[in-house]
Length: 508
Image (cartoon, rainbow, N blue to C red):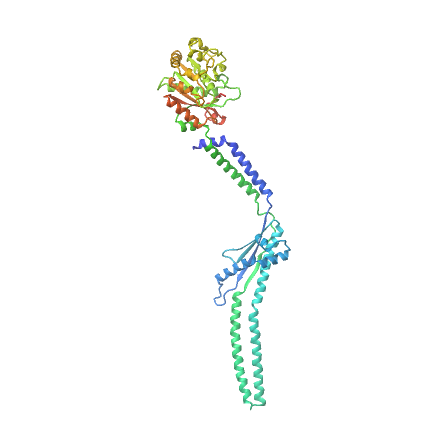
């Protein structure tokens, strides 16, 4: 699809795009205002890991595990129940957990606690309470964990006191009763045991303190949550903007889908793609009451002049004395095109004859305001001669052979061998003979007449004619050795027609 054809397609179904645009924007706007707004508040917590006393550097893997542990604790059932009790929320811990998102910020010592709630103040309170409860529980855990070293310290103090008591007793015995060697020996043994016990406790105390120092982390609230002033969702402006974008793209997509499904013909490019025939003229859609050449402005008459010139140019290859005009379906405007083309040709001084070969729904006698008491049917029935049936019109150089009274079997009448003789006689008397025939698909009259005409002109109505019908009519004419000279695209909309600078009215 070329750019021009693409733009014409969009313009032709512009209301589909407009409607889709309005609908999607309306849905986005209504949805954004109907949905309950959600407010988001975040608290920032820092977990500073203590360095390893042996290396005086932080253990990265240990720190990551600690951060992830805190993140899990922050959404644990006991902590959430504690937050629920503190704020007196009418929520179960699982429901409260659905409102909270805890994330460890990569490459940092920070944990972000985010809460979404329909109330801005409540969102901030929950985020801060979760952070403070996490800090409080961590401090209590650390305090409980340090009791081991304190217990060892107490044992060490007790052993030191026992050693001091033994030393005092030893000094007293040496002063008052140095001969009590048995007790002196016992005191020495007990002192050695107590000293060994103290050294063992001291080693345990140092090891316990080392382990505790590795476990201790400093957790603090770096940035408390504040009640947001604007909701985080729905983002109304963004939603409406996205709705507008989706509306435009969706409208264009819908137009392209409808165009692919639509078999109607709108442009000359479609015609040439379907049947590889020249479009001899594009006739602009008529205003109401504007159906004849004489009532059209000069710019509109240009389309028929173009059609006239193109038909004459084809005579270089083969004479076109008799031109059959047909269409696939009724009401595509062929009768008016025949009459206006005849008017246009007659203005050059050529002798023109219009023959109304539609013996079912004749129209030419009404267009030219003549009688239809005699005509083609009476000539073919040999009731009158051609000279008696041909009528003059109000236009110089233009004659009319109307349909005459409608016969019982038009097809049989047109199929007689006498019809070809009549056409030859008419071609000899006039410079050009235009045959207005019925629509081809409902009846086969045009197929009967096509072989005895010099050329066949197909009329299709823009936005009405079906592509399958066009290919069918052209194919049927070719099957009987008819010569199709081209197509007239009728009822072009104003925008498409005005771009060609040669537009005019159309038939109904």
